[in-house]
Amino acid sequence: MTDDAIAPREHLTDWLRDAHAMEQQAEAMLKAMAQRLEHYPDLHSRVVEHLGETRWQREQLEGCLTRLGSSPSTVKDITGKLMAFGESVVAMMASDEVVKGAMAGYVFEHMEIASYTVLIKAADTAGDLQTKGVCEQIIKQEAAMAEWLLQHLPATTSNFLSRSARPGVEAKV
Ligand SMILES: [Fe+2]
Image 1: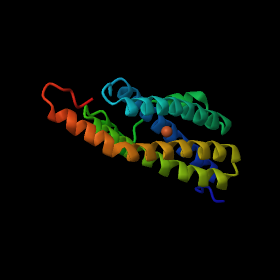
Image 2: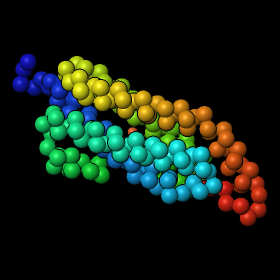
Image 3: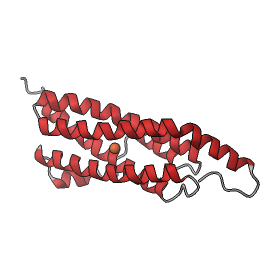
Image 4: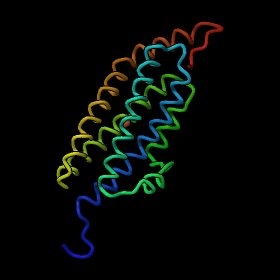
């Protein structure tokens, strides 16, 4: 390996930091959604459930980073780091309209699925089977959430449309 070569393990560590930042975004976003949605109880409880999963995911990633020799302070440094794509989805999710929020959630879950697909391969290549196992568990939760959001998007849409058409009824959240 020449001086400018980068070992898979370094990329893995870097991408794990990105995933950690992504989960921090997800946590903030889901927390904001959980505070609203009072007229959409099914969506609300699924969001609350995934908020719990997301916190667990963030802790798991912190464990992987620590194991790879990335200090807790490094983890702290990336707090608030936003990826441009995530940021635009978060903006959409922060919208006070439930349909846009559900759509943005679905898109965000797919960004997560892509990230963990990359991480699984990178961890495998770097020989870090513990990180690979963690990412395999996380990706199942993301895929289940994405699937749920898609399955429930028609119901969310029709609830929104019927509430919206009634005078004096709050439809957005
Ligand atoms: Fe996640």
